[in-house]
Length: 221
Image (cartoon, rainbow, N blue to C red; front, side, top):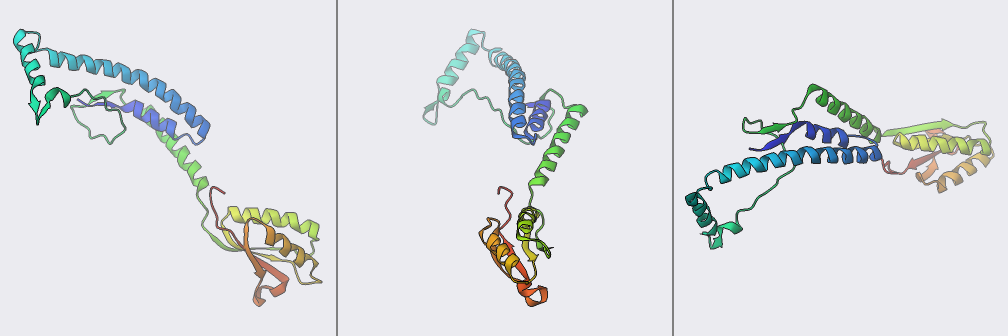
């Protein structure tokens, strides 16, 4: 008769779904302690049931003798006793409802609701880690800014664009005498989030704008 730990199983899921790693470790450790107590009690009951079933016919001399002969017999050349062992099988697996299953800790609506709440919190946390759909291009206009003003603006622009999974950024700086353009391109050429740079095409400003391809987005970066 398989023993199914319904509420204990959901308790594990609720602990496992905690988005914060430290809280998850603490919750799983607390679950382990509680599950150990419940499972140990169940194992003790199962052992009593097992012993009663296996010993009920062996208290007589004939019953005892029959068991001795069975366990001493060869099976495929190997003593039967060497192929017959007591197993303890504890694992999470799909449950096919059966009247023969022993349910320990019946799952209540309150426990199920708590588990689903934890699962939804985990899904929400996971969604924040998923990369955004790629954005082909984003641009910013820095006309009228000095170099000292432009660089911090570009830094935030690049970080936000990268976080939003932007593939290409265009920085409009104008042509002028080329001071701002030169500073921006030197800055972009050394930036860790920039894969390559170049002037925009004629329809989008030519030398009056600089385009930069960003490195591939990674949730672990």
